[in-house]
Structures are given as C-alpha cells and as structure tokens.
Figure 1 (cartoon, chains in turn brown, orange):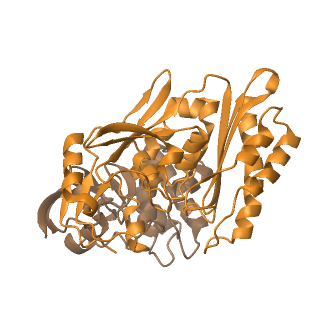
Figure 2 (figure 1 turned 90 degrees about the vertical axis):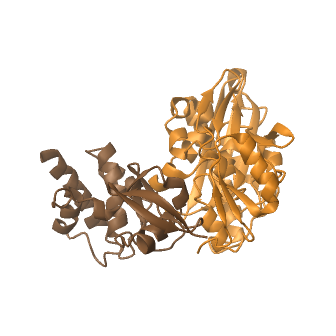
Length: 157
Length: 291
C-alpha cells in the first residue's frame, strides 16, 4: 500500500506517494519525474543510477527509498548552480566525454563525490573513483580527461 | 525488479522491537541495512513471501570498538568506515581486512554494511573470507538472548545461515592475536564491480625464529556453497619457515581441498587451478607485510 513520504531532492522537499519496497531510483524517475538518473542493470552492476545521498555516491537502484527519508538526495538535475552548469558538466562537454550518454549522469555523480573529497586526484584515483560505473561505449579515456579538466577548472575558478 | 509482496517497512530504534517484529512476522520478515544485496536476491528469485522489511539502521550499530582482546564491528558499520579504521590501515595482522576493502567501488563502500556482507551468506563476497582467516565470529541477538557464533559455524549453505528466525546479526568480532601475526586477501574478478571468481584469505601466526606456529587458509568465490577452509595448505605452512618452498607446497596442497563450481564466471577447472596461484600470491603478500 502506498504511503506519503517527504524527500529532500536537490534542496527541494518533495511529497511523494511510494510503495514500501520502492527503490530510490524508481522514486526519482517514476514518482518525482526526475529522469536524469538512468536505469541500467537495476542490480548495482553498471552505475548509471548513481546519485549522492548526503554527499556520498550510491546506487539508487539498490537503495530503499524508505531508508533515505531523512537524507539529502542530489541528482544530476541538482548539479547546476545559479543557472550555470557544474564544472563537471561543462568539462564533459568540452572534453567530448559523452558518446551514447547513458552512463554520463552516473559517472558525473560518482565524480562529484571524488572531487569534493579529493580536488586534485591522480589519474589512478580518478579511475578508482569511477570503477563502479560502466561505459558500454568504452569511452573511458575522454571521461578521465573530463574529470581532470573539471578538477583543474574547479581549482582555477 | 521489486519485492512487491512487501507491505511494511519498519525502522525500529531498539533491538527489542526488532526481535518482536521478527517474532511477529516470522519467515515473512527480512532484516535490511544498506539493502545492496536485496535486489540481487530478488532478481535471482531467491526471495519470496517477504511482507516486512526491518531496517536496523537506527539501532546505533555503526561503531567500531577497538578493545584489548578483540575488535568489535557493529552490524551497520559501512565498508567505507571499516576501511578508514586506523588499525585496519596499519596493523599487519588485519591486512586481510585492509585488502578486502580495496576492491568495492565507492557506491558499495558508501552503502554496504559489515552485517549485511556476513548475514547475506553469499559465497562470492569478500569480507567473509578475510574475516574467516582471522577467526572472526558473529554476534547475534534474538528472543533467547545474545550469542557469539564462530563465523565458520554461521554459514550453512548458499544464502543460508544458522540464525534462528527471531535472531539478527548485531556485529562481528575479531580476536586480537597474542603473537606476531600477518594476513592478506586476494580477489580475482572479471571487472571492478563484479562478484569474485575466486578469493583467498590467509593468516600466518609467526613464532620465534620465523617459524609459522599457525596458519589459516580460506578459499571463497565459487568454490562451494560457503567459503572452504584448506587444512592441507595450513599443514604445509605450519611448523617451518614460510619461504618460497613452503609457499609452493601450500599452493599445491590447497588443490586437494577445493572442489569448485562451474558457472558463467569461470569453470571449475579454472577456479581450482587459480586457487593455488592466488594462495601463493596471498601468502607472499602476507609475508611482505612482516618485513
């Protein structure tokens, strides 16, 4: 039976009717209408559904929505600030790090935690930071370059 | 894939309520924490008739207590929290735990819990194999009180454990060794985000003059329904120096004790051959920690 919960998504409180077994992914896409978060394998193997929960990257497909009611959820829609793209988003454009684009949002969210905690990561640290995300186009080189570009832009900006 | 039979999601704030809920719902209740393996079980058709999910996230079990005799790790301690524990990073005897925490991607480190990785009773998981090598035990609480279960006795087959229906895991405990001790863990995987093809955990307790007094060798990840101990490899390592000859002998000896499974990740023959190779690598890594 559905029940009404409040969820803080991108600094906005949403009142949503959810089933007690709903994943955070289903809640975001089907209940809150935020479809930037992608559904890939739906079993924690691909990383497309990565969002931040209290600033920490998590697979939203594996996260029970009932367990994150008192947390702050950040999705790709919450990355821009004041109408400006996040440095990560701009860097993915500038580096041409998007092929089919399906993994992109998840990779940017995993990278967001990485750069928040380690503003100047080495290439190895970047690759480890996105090791929970698959790009089936195998465009990893450009993705790593984009994250390096975002790190540099954040430092200089 | 969703567990559509679920009617209720509980978040109790004390152990007593958890036990009452388990008692009330019996086999139709499931304890959850990070919830990361729930989808895996549902998609494999291994969960049915679950009507109540009981989250133990609000019980305050997310603590690591470093005592003189043992390190106690609460059930809802995140993998990432354990990785950040200074003792895990620094002590050679905890090397197997440190190694096991190097593999999961950040998303799992942020949500997977120690209690979940044990109580899932999944033979492909990494932390249980490292904990077995360190003679770890499980703390469980239920209607008849709390008890300590040696980890080896806890596992009772594929996704099965020896918990009673009103019991749940509150934490794990690792005894601090009295003598110089070192350990290591190695996982073989298809990609950075897959379950193990094979994994190996070892611990060596070293006596005077570099003689190995006691060895623990466990192999997991598709070698059986639960991780397998190798008495033959342990015997090959005990009572002498752990030099290249002893390591080679152990790498041969382990083959007698493993009878792996074949699946989409690897054949039984491959797993068997690699168990010797991984054991030798793990032993070398453990010995390097001592020097």
